[in-house]
Length: 327
Image (cartoon, rainbow, N blue to C red):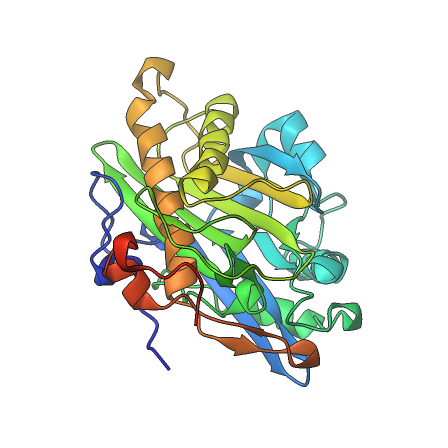
């Protein structure tokens, strides 16, 4: 079995902008990530929590929808007010509502006077490798992800909300990356679970298709650039565009969403200066999606179904040596 490696360690460098120290969403000051992973007994699922410091005072944010075939709790209020007021959690489709309820309980315990809160919870369908109907996520799993959130490099691949996901014909999961700009940092974390033909720096890497109905992608973009919610919406749309760079076919059953937020509450950025932030988002999401694949491991799960990890030599050797089908 090959060891998980980030795509940059395989010699694949996405874009031209410099990364942050960790090349992760946690390079954005004040952004924490925690995860809970559930495996065994037909289960491959979990929770990934993105916890920005200062969320309780609201942070500017926006949501972009590539295809709305999914469950993203809390979006209408984000659209209406242009802010988030809670952490952002990711999980498996049928556990979305249990995760939202547990997040609400966690928040109420920390705010005894609150009478209205808008939890943000997204999902992709991990039902190919996990017994999704069991809805195994409990409040303890949610609390553990939130309470252990840190500024360290988040685990990638088969962890948290990405434990049971697959993308582009291979096992996938959680991936993250970042870019630094003179004025701040842009970072992304993804939960990859969509169809298409894996493409690395414009080169196709063919694979056998995964016979699964769950095809979606959740993208969370964080920054400390002083942007308003409208500008963050423009960043979120570019995040979804980046899926096409790695080969997404944007299938009809794919719920493709991006949430972008900033830890800055004083928007001063001008629209004509957004070109480099757009590039930073596109590069971060593209690399995060590739990391979600190269950091994943072959997984056998529910009903003995198996999804194989992408062989690293297919990526590091170059597409001219890639077979038309996996052996």
